[in-house]
Image (cartoon, rainbow, N blue to C red; front, side, top):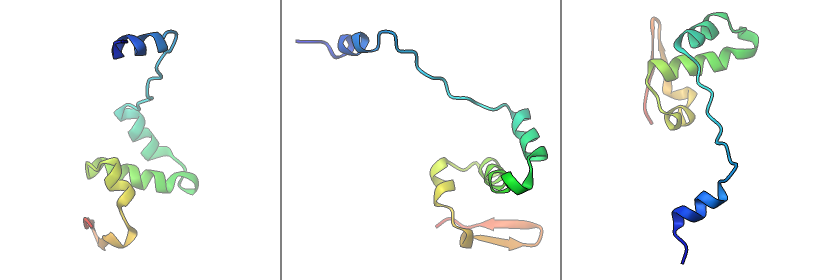
Length: 80
């Protein structure tokens, strides 16, 4: 009988896992400051909400426009 580890080791010979690309804090700030509104406004808004609200991916994808309330100087985001 095969050991599970040895089977995976044999199957993964020559496989090089891809490393995720990660932006630095300065690169994120530069993108927020300089990205074109016409093309990247929604990405910038989601990025700012995600970072400032410490949101998880699932929280961002479940967020609805009607859950955001504008209170002049602040935005109130309600959890649903």
